[in-house]
Image (cartoon, rainbow over all chains, first blue to last red; front, side, top):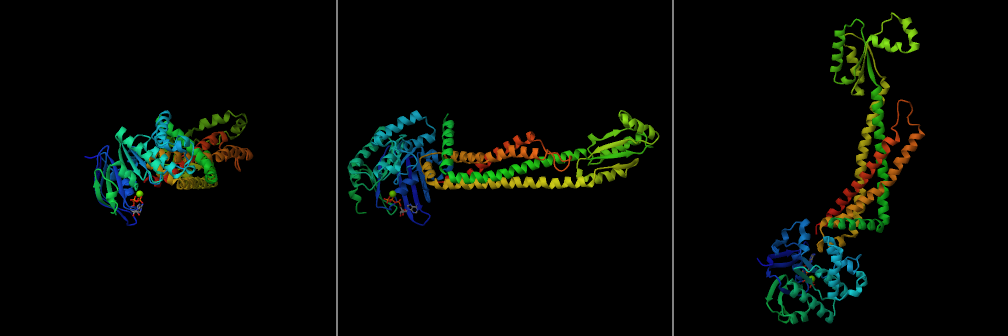
Length: 233
Length: 298
Ligand SMILES: Nc1ncnc2c1ncn2[C@@H]1O[C@H](COP(=O)(O)OP(=O)(O)OP(=O)(O)O)[C@@H](O)[C@H]1O
Ligand SMILES: [Mg+2]
């Protein structure tokens, strides 16, 4: 069985919007995959199924042998601890500062604070935010918040990292650096990376697998894809 | 170790939250305090009524005067018949023979003369009977009166009977009130925490998404409920301790007559206080579990 499997996935939201239709995909351990497509094509929905923020209306999603849709509410946290997520809307805790936000998941798992400190500082260093350690989310720019979110996703060095538009609020230089961080984690730790993005330049430069969605349907899936070939979909 | 860290942090969070939402917390603490004061009053009344009823029941006996013609065998039969009645507490039935009564009277100097005067007047043997249910005292007495070799019976006044029945009603009403008030308290605390939770549902959602387990998310709210309940019980506890002692001294420890003696403060105020604190804390936690449940499903 592959690391990640989408089998005949349909997703219809409560308001009747059909976000995904008959999606079939497999992703291997350690793979680096881009998901591209127009706004509203279902990229975020597809990633949300992986950590069960949404459940499929039909079909099964398997992550590391776990049938995600069947997971009980009380056990979902076990899955989420193995996945780092860079959310499109950051989802930082407003009352915690940068350090505390990144440390929060580890703290809630009950890790020792000395151990947490080492990990958080390392993650902060990777995203280049060491000088903002005591700032609160509302004191940060969009790009800085995004980097905090990235730091939180990688702090526990998870085997699966899901990034939803991780460079949406970054300038080209910072985008490049962040992509390097994520690529390094992919190479050093062998983490699987799934990244939804609109950033043509990054997709074209990285020469990774590219899955293109259109109206909730997979319209192309290329091993060393680029944005241009899908541009007119 | 891990659990200690999580609980320690939860306690800190809970106190932070109580102070952050100070006005709301105060509102629920005062409501809780008011209901717990009523619970305390109801408890104190219940204790007192139970003790007073007990006192009255203990002094309420049926005295049976046995015919002087009765032989030892007749008396034995009569005793068995009496103890056979379902309302008679057989273990407490006391038989005083003619001679015993005379002896005990003789011990008293002033009675000696009277006895000499009475000399030949018949002194009858008696049974002193305690009943299990004072409300049926009259019926039991009448049944005994019909038995052979019973000259006549004497038993407690009807008025005392009525007081005891009335106290029974008061006691039951108090128990119902206590249960109802506890439910009201749970509801109040549950609502307060619902509001704190509602304003934090976004945070809870984020915590869930980064892999925090439900119990860890719930803990601060549980502790918050506990803290609210315990703080809410402080004023009722003080009122119980000082208020009851004051009232007890004020009325001199009894109501209307010497027959109705109140329970001494030392015997009940600490137990009542403990019950109030425990009720406050448990009800607070119960209220908060109810409030959190809905937000842990994402
Ligand atoms: N919670 C929701 N309830 C109802 N409809 C939703 C919900 N989330 C998404 N949708 C709808 O589902 C479709 C797919 O949305 P999705 O967020 O997956 O798109 P996307 O590809 O991530 O877009 P973008 O590039 O703008 O982030 C859209 O039509 C959207 O309106
Ligand atoms: Mg999206």
